[in-house]
Amino acid sequence: MITLLDYGAGNVRSVVNAVERLGGSIKPVERPEDILNAEKLLFPGVGNYESMIRILNEKNYIRPLRAYLEADRPFFGICLGMHALFEGSEEDLSGYESLGIFKGRVDRFKTGLSVPHIGWNGVNLKKDSPVFRDVDQESKFYFVHSYHVVPQDPEIVLTTTCYDYEFVSAVQAGNVIGTQFHPEKSGNAGIKLLENFINQTDLTDRGRIEIQGRGLSKRVIACLDVRANDRGDLVVTKGDQYDVREKGDVRNLGKPVELAKRYYEEGADEITFLNITGFRDFPLKDMPMIKVLEQTSRNVFVPLTIGGGIRDYTDTNGTRYSALDVAARYFRSGADKISIGSDAVYIIENYLKTGVKTGESSIEQISKVYGIQAVVISVDPRRVYVESPDHAPGHHVIATRIPGPDNEAYCWYQCTVQGGRTARDIDAVTFAKACQDLGAGEILLNCIDRDGTNSGFDIELINAVCNAVSIPVIASSGAGCKEHFSQVFEQTEAEAGLAAGIFHRKEVPIQEVKNHLVQKNIEVRNRV
Ligand code: 1PR
Image (cartoon, rainbow, N blue to C red; front, side, top):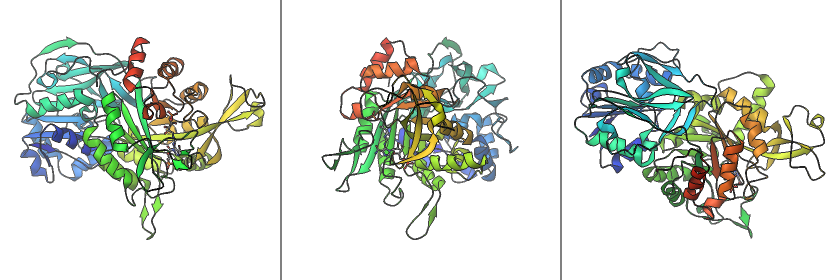
């Protein structure tokens, strides 16, 4: 029996699914005494340290948790669940009592690389631990965090990982284990770690060893645009420059849950669902995407992003739902990240007018509770050609190598909303910078001109946005062959390449993309 410490802001569904897939059974902590009665305690932590430590104090969990840990009882903390073992975090200004089991603190990354550190990275094993038994040393694990632990005692370091510098990515002292990465989202390697924790009776490490891992991988993401067709069936569709209809019908490329499982098994590093009519339907009405997430997260153990319709709503009865309510429902159903599209454009337009961070926007509210790493902004820009930069005052204009219809040598990228239907007077570079300001963790950079064309990613657009932000950028739209992925990773700082059509139409298997990237010496996660 595994006792699960869920403080209400973690994506515990994936952890539950992983443990149940291993034949384990889960009992949630409901009262402080459940902690001391636990045989083995699993603490998945996602989001914001301050919220987590406040909730642990409010629920009177700190003392029983400290007693359990000081008795060296079997414990596995994930991400924030590991941070909680230390004396405090730079992320926490509240001054709430922390567990202080390990001497040391939690610091924000000090690096010129993108923060949060999102993606698949290797680990350097420092101790021979039963937890890593039969785990392929070439394995990569999924990280999504802006802070990392800084232990005072080197003896507790179980693994380190390299991201600009070597940071501690897992700790172990006796039966107390913590990992920065998410084993429940790290494919078979992660599942094996959890299996070792569940099945081993004696977890204590066997002393020092030295095994070197490899660096952060570029991510290959499969994207499923989802909507109801004219008969009301939920299908995976695909636009051609956002037009999803073919001979009058909504293109039907398959069922969301089945396709997502296939892509996971083919080696996709993440799966993104976009509910493309979300801007007009109320996602919690008949909750189509909720069921898709619940079913998908039972068999897919890599990060799931859900977008479409993340905004405030008032339903037909006049009941108001905030974007945070919608996001919370998605997180509880198995999502790891949410993606905000149209609402983000409206938010940024207001923010740029006033320069004031109200704390009320969906971007700020969701990142405050779930952490910036859980908030993706999906932007849908299109090229607007101009004779000179003077013809686009207030916009970020680039000199383009792809001249316009009237041979214009300049262009800017205009943001759109409602699935590209309405253009807004704001450019994608200015927009992306402001989104980062408000707490977005990642930019999903679509491109209407390239969407569905198989003509390759818009390298100029991606470079313009990557040069403007320090958070990860996902290149999207236009992938037509495996070479388009090596091109975008060689010519831009994009940390991920996303595609839809070539995967749905089975033109290029994901594994073929990865094998090609390996041949081009581009770091990828090649063991699923
Ligand atoms: O505005 O918060 O409700 O979010 C709506 C979301 O749905 C946005 O993220 C928007 O990008 C997306 N969306 C809305 N309408 C469409 C459409 O196609 N009619 N999809 C749409 C946009 C972008 C990617 C696509 C890549 C790769 N699709 O999902 O998969 O461009 O395509 P490719 O590899 O086939 O070229 P809100």
